[in-house]
Each structure stands twice: as structure tokens, then as C-alpha cells.
Amino acid sequence: MRQVIEQAKRRRLRRKTYVWMLSGLAVVSALLYWDQIAVLYIVSTLVLTALLLAVAFSDLGRGERELPDPDTVAMGENRMPPGASSQSVSNPRKNRRKGKA
Image 1: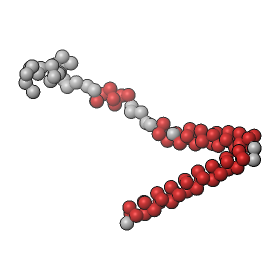
Image 2: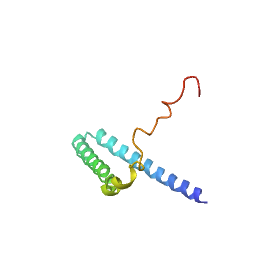
Image 3: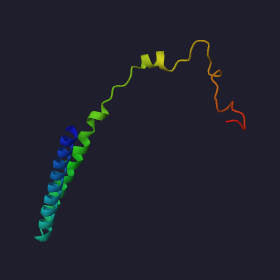
Image 4: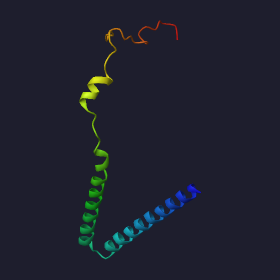
């Protein structure tokens, strides 16, 4: 049942998108037909400005990420166990003998 509702919502959204696209095409075509280039220039500038503003403000939510506290990162995540040195950690590919898988 939920899939049917989701599909109906997608169809409605797709229909609205097509209606907006066709109406925009009709307006642009009419302005070109009646040689209203100045009006077309103003309308296209306003639409482009609105599009750029929408894109700029839509990314604000993703840009506000909380950074981890530097003290907790330094204390726990990248520390070696006591007694271990960076030389004791071996590379398994390096120790592999030729001819063996």
C-alpha cells in the first residue's frame, strides 16, 4: 500500500514538473514570437537569480557538521597499544612469499 502511495506522489510531482516546463516553454516561445526580447532578458535574469539562490541556500544544512573534540580524538582513537611501536606493525603483503597465494 505504501508503494502505491509513493508512486502516486511521484506521478503527481512528475506531472507538475511537466506542466511547469511546458508553461515556461510557452512563455519563452510567446515572448520570442512577439519580439519581446527585453522582457525575455529580464525574466531570464530573474529566473536564473532565483535558481542560484535556491541552490545556495539548499546546501546550508549539510555544511553545518559538528567537528569532533580535538582532546577526545587525541586521547583515544589513533593511539597504539602500550608497548607497541610503529615498527612492530607488519604489512601482510610484504611478508608474503612469491609463488604462494
